[in-house]
Length: 550
Image 1 (tube, rainbow, N blue to C red):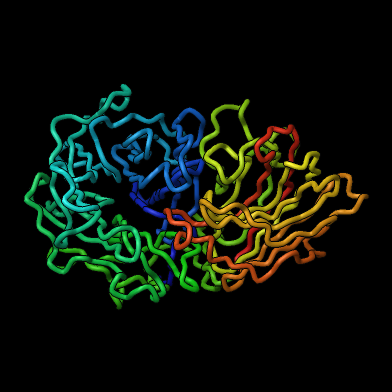
Image 2 (spheres, one colour):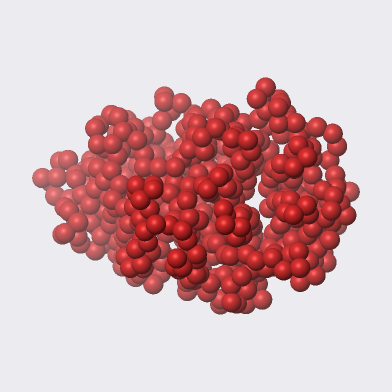
């Protein structure tokens, strides 16, 4: 049966995808930077419909990225399966380096990291050769010194994976540089993956930087140590020649996989601009691949990413109608129906699997929130930390996955001190965010909309409603809501979702993008509480939170 699937296959902040197949099942991971849990694990039986089944970094003590900015932390994981064991290699920026973790079940638990001492640089990958050897592949600055910024090389390092179970560094022998990019004066050859197909080694990698000039290139060799030869028509996929006005830009950082029918597929990151910015960050797309004269080619009619791709499937049931412009899928073998769009999330003792916090909690004593203090609620404590600092703020949220959307939360919070605030937040970075917060103004419970738009700029109150809650509201219980349409934000509050009043509209959403903030992440919609410099002992309870794509 032939159906169509829609790109992206993962909407919103899901960059640097890596994919592998185990039998007839596919698994995919992406970068999470300074968010926790880290490295989401997705499963699919058909390559089109993906369900998150776990997170590889999911417990305190497994890693530590205290003090990391939002766009630091965990960079570019690679996932592979070999003889029943799953492997993820990844980079922890600043205070770690490259590491490897393993699991028998891709849903977890994953092991504590084994650090790959001697593996410099970023973007690690692992390759299992058919002769029994295992290789690390990564990218590092040119060893003789960078002739120019981005003058990197891709290199290999043999591994003894038996040492991993002993908690020992598995790298053995000497490193060898094998490739410096396909184009002359290439910058940032990165995200490398090695494959062996029909007896030939292939090296897939990105170059050109992570923005508008991003591209995917390929080389091949008869021996993994080289010499390597690039495809004459490199890059094999890029949109940089289309300019910034293209519907899809920043195409790069790819991985390929074959299915059980012998077809090949490429996953990659790319961005969708709206009004000149990319509010959803770098998302995961997928394209079919064919082989011609021993080289892979993108098998779309344009040779580029297309919104809708024809896909041959053996799935026993396919529902072809659309709901909210998302294709719906049912597979009786899996006994589930997945609609990856809207969600009303509740907090029944644990965070929903797709929700994130900032940086890894260290221990329960220092916890900024609780899911057990009140049954059915997320309790956020008014700790000193804020979302503008590099600490552990009382914040949690989920990715924004649509251009037009709404996000609402039911919150109970009664401020006791003037420094306290709690409410709804749209978070791009420490320096670019909107907060609609309940606060105390000399005994009067009020509401304000706060904008942060620059590292050196102080918070700016762009809307305020004094006495938003009457004297009868001794215990404030309110719905806070935000809507985004055509990159304009509107903010609301009310007793329930059916009686909302607007506090501000026509607010610029474009600042919630890396085009303004820099960095590598997309935006999150979430909730927060803070004592703004003091641990005040108060708290806010979140009863539910709902996200909807419009």
